[in-house]
Length: 316
Image (cartoon, rainbow, N blue to C red; front, side, top):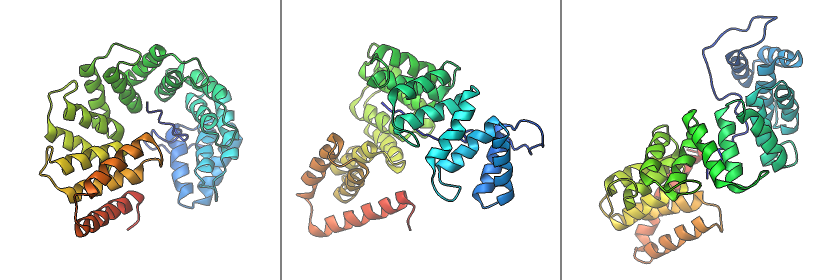
């Protein structure tokens, strides 16, 4: 299940820009505006943000913590970021509570501690913060810091998804597709996967591609499967790249093209964690295809794969 463990949720929701007014509490958008200027090297904006944080302004504390955690203050300093997140979390801010929970989960700036992570995620989730609700679902699903309970995980995913959390929509869709924590209902799973996929979630796009490929919750349609696999692959999802590679290799939904198939399988392999079951599946498929290709075709495919991987990494 997808946890979407993004530590720095404080600066996710950019609202309308409002100029800070001395002496009053900052709005979230005020703090984000100053942080963006500080990231561009504006020393005055950085000093203003720090002063606000030192004076106890909650949004300034969170966003200044984000700058430290992302290394925008000269170098990455998660330990200092935690100090500011904790101040805001102690004031009951759910964004800061979620940031602090994620820090304990990943061991960023503090020792990893699933019990502490669950404590802070729960505080934010009880305030109705969707990202924290999704986190609670992921902890319940895995039994990390809390007792494993797939039914309660499903309930958290459903609440977060209904509250608009994209990652939770993906998790909820997957739960319905596999019947984890609920009765298996692929049709409902597809509904939630499509919601997340339309918001750009690459993992949901990959799963939606699989649903169309195998006719799970929808009529089998290889062309639609290819379309969703392509979106997910371009979004950086390894299983989407794998699905797209297989479709090209076998001519499912597209004309058979071993070169493109091998290229996408190579991309999928590079995206996968070495030694993982996913990586082993991709490697077997790629080796099977490789035995049927000429050396020149393999060379062309590897060049295509290298071009795509460079685009993913942002290198020219």
